Image (cartoon, rainbow, N blue to C red):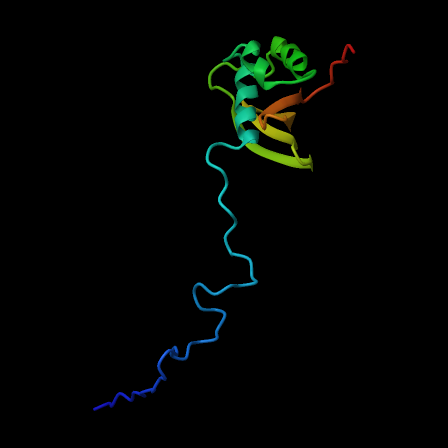
Length: 153
């Protein structure tokens, strides 16, 4: 039969029992970063949201003026020119976003690319998002594969 050994410690009044000095115990401060990244804010990312919005306009499912409050600068005019050509209109299945990537040139700005499957073709779409003083994201440029239209400044 195994014996359990215990040790009795006599404490003086007003003192605490000896504790562990190990910094790895739960609740101890640590200089290491957590292993999991902080949670992303709820809701869709602005890159995904704008890719879907632009896709809806360029495929003819939504009118161009639907993007009026979500654009700034020349982006609305560029979008209107693109929508006239209907570059993502297909017969049959609606176009879908296959992949999205982005680059952060500075805080509050995103340069985004999306690969769009339209029928049996894969198309490229690029757009720029900028965050305003009101913290809302707005599209400031949009392009589809092909030559650019000149701006009338």
